[in-house]
Length: 327
Image 1: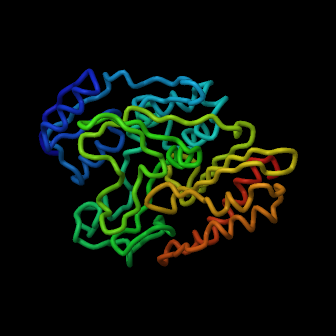
Image 2: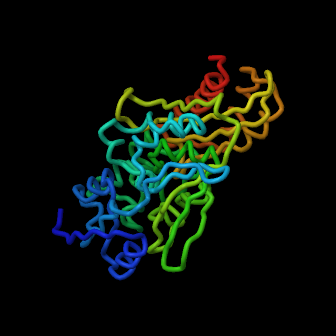
């Protein structure tokens, strides 16, 4: 790693001002992704602004919403009785992510901001449009077993690595940010970007905008949720395919349902067509199967990841069956 300057700030305004003032600076909290990127030479900030002293660690109810501060640790959120009671899908997704040691360091905001684990992105000897626009996408015709089947472009077929974000996409969370132009709320489904022509841009934040927290609206899904993560090993591995399923049941009928997938796109992938199909229908394996087929319409494999075209719908069915207690 190159030498860098290190400073600490105590307020969100100081953090924003310090970043805006210095174009070669980056914020650091847990550092579980940023430090890896620095070691690999993927990024080389000349200044790190430590934001760990900011008062953004809360996990609390605000009216009908659950608010979680951007600096709340993944482990604290996963272990929170409030989260487990009101939004168990989020707790399940966090418990499936990384290792306990990493969850004890990683923050909610950092989890949202983490970058792809595509090996072409991490290897500076290989071409990667996300790391350096114009180089080409090495994965497109290379080894692409972990890569996207939805929403990709000829510029990038990488996937977003977060488990937490899949659950937040399903739960219609909003992201609270503050920056040089003031504060605003961003619907979670609009926070991350598809690669398009600008794969180097992971999200819709503007320069100097700091995530201060997330808010999850109250829902009726607490009794029937499941986060299914299919991976090569049961610990500390990124998802080949994951499914966040939340169902509101009325007897055997589905009153409402939320579905999102991970490991399949450049951002958490919401399955709205499948949701719309299932609403009002009975919770049967046949209906789950039809919904899964709707969910994968438009999916495209790139060779090594063609197995995901079968794995994805099977995972959707399994997640739904487990969520409603029929697995």
